[in-house]
Length: 537
Image (tube, rainbow, N blue to C red; front, side):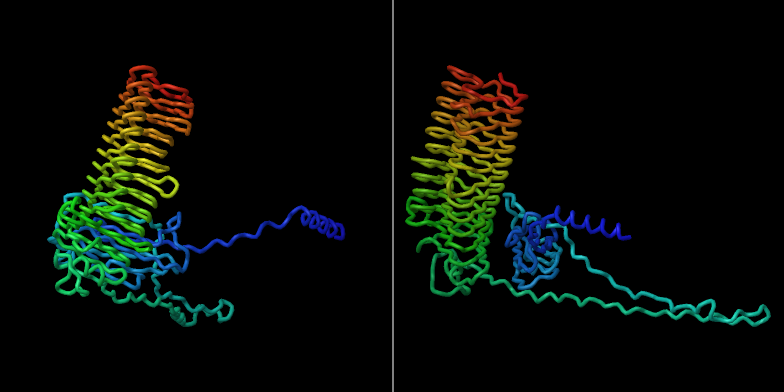
């Protein structure tokens, strides 16, 4: 016994010496999931503010704002779930547990569930779907539980004789265990969202928005978070541009019907159209913005957070960023930016902030003397993300389609753009995935791309360079091509497919074939590293 005790003490001392205390664990915050269902799904989408964590959860105790974005002809009829501060298309949820919210929709101007008479847009409307986690709220269903009373012990009762009259055993008494029924959550009566209706196209301001209300009067009279409905018509801002200094939602009747302009033509305008101030959150949908003329952002100057949905920005003039000049956070969804002209940078968009494009078209814009016919993107300042979009028919001195970087482009097309110098399609650094560069022309180098980056599952075809690199012109910065195809490109001097100056190009599982040049390297010219499984020639 003493031997085992001594041995145990020795082992305890050995393990105490060998094991050092680990670092103090960082507490993991408690998170909950939020599920939002729009019923029916085709009626629209929603935005969550703030956005969820990487896993789609929210930290416990956080209040989340749900903004419903109905499609044309739909409206919110009912909020179902643990929401509060309901205001029409907006409600809030406090994340003290996992939550599930259902938003029931109905056709505008008709009884719920019956076809409405709203206008159907000819252009597709993209449904915004915020990320949510599968954390349904489980409501326990309680029922009374029957419990039998204890039977007498077999040894505590006398054993009856076979001649005795049998006594019936007592019927067991059922004892019902009381069950607590949870108190139902009371959904507060929805508070009507502040709504202002524009009733005339004339640009007037008398300090009130009543039955006679202009767009300017509605914008000034509306409070924080209000919605302004803009019916079909042409709204000419004769006084000055429209400055938005509070959080607002502007809803038009579709870009073909609701037109907001600085003047009847950009040449006669002396100001822009919209100016979104810093720290302001604005959503604009279903409008055309045109004919602005100013130093920055002929169509829109955005210093805040702007979401532009199902709209068009066309025919504006400016020194920089004639369509849109962005230094804030800009999101384009199902939107067209076309026919804008900048004398210097960014014919379509000048981006010095965060720009996200989704299902949008940027076409026929021009930067006359400098960079980025379609988009001028300042690499040191902003971010640029392009999804399922098309950039075509734009012109610039450098980067006919896009100038700058780094940027990310997925499932998109850059075609038919031109530059007077380098980069007919793109001039800069980018990550391109599942995309196409075709039919772009550079007067000097890089018909499709002049720059660097990573290209995966990309097709570059039918591009022309007046000098070097019909498809790609690469200098010292690294360029990697994986699972890509370069074909039918042309260089009027060297490197019909690729021109590499300092050997920074790597190829993996890539095809370079049927390209041409008038002098050297019809397929490629310069030092190029093969990582395997390539076909050249």
